Amino acid sequence: MASVIAATDWHDWHLPYDDDTSPLSRRLRLVQRHINDWLDGRTESSLRVVSVCAGQGHDLIGALASRSDADRVRAELIEFDPRNVAAARIGISGAGLNGITVTQADAGDFAAFGTAVPADLVVLAGVLGNISDGDVRATIGALPRLCASNATVIWTRARRHPDLTPAIRGWFADAGFAEEAFHAPADVLFSVGVDRFCGQPQQAPPNGRIFTFVA
Image (cartoon, rainbow, N blue to C red; front, side, top):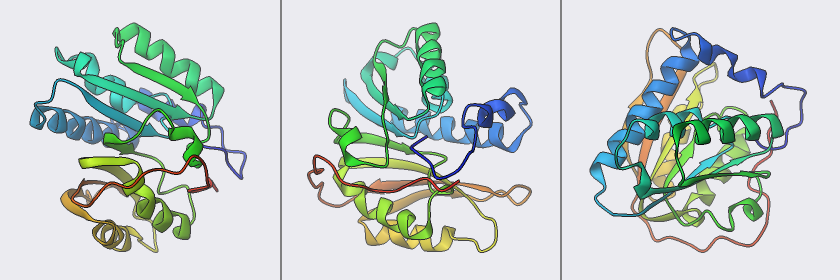
């Protein structure tokens, strides 16, 4: 997670993953499925991935751990909490994923992305629900500076009232993305979206704030 304006314990936030039936675990499996679908649809020998506010990296590590072609991926997990950074590195080592690195940095600033972009896949899980509505729009607007041509973004957002996901889907379209999937299960509040970048990539600035965590 990025630097925050709250006392949320972002390490303990991951505890519901221990319960396979929890909404967080269900969301994780859906994100992992889309990561695998994305890899299955790309034939390149080398692909670059960045995970924004990566936490302990369960989504990307879990998706790659069982793949024979995981070495095609060069991924950077950007995470602020040092305990989550340590946990992610342990997970990467245990899975034998030599192509993944973890950077301890504030992903809310462009400075954190110097070696990570342009990316072919941007994982934006657990971000859009923990920043202000204005920062959600600004973050989506900044994605062309993080994305390579034809890149994919996988994002999540809860649908608590007032539900911002209709606006989010429109903001992706405004930023040059085409929606490929949107999941909003009726029995839970989470949603997962997948959007493909159809616009022209833009160069990321060396620094500058994108968003600030508020929860």
